[in-house]
Amino acid sequence: MVTTSLASHADLKVIQQMLGHSSIVTTADTYTSVLPETAHQAAQATADMIIEAARSIAGSRLGASA
Image 1 (cartoon, rainbow, N blue to C red):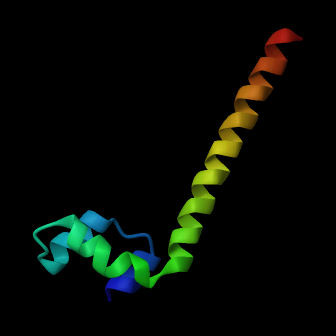
Image 2: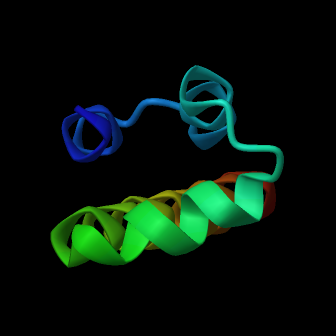
Image 3: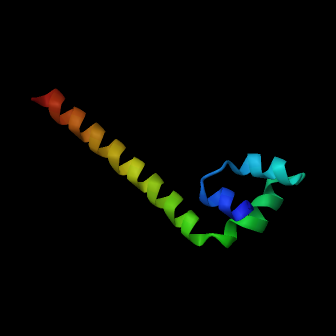
């Protein structure tokens, strides 16, 4: 259940509370290493957002100078 929740991008804090862990670190240490593909997807999504933001900034600068 936990790995499925993480794979569906459930919030780690919610999972911590569902499991009754006193610390989010316990939840993260126990379960996040189980799904390396999920970690890769999160990193890729972050990189995509940064690239899109950079393109947006560059586009607005190009439009301002025209």
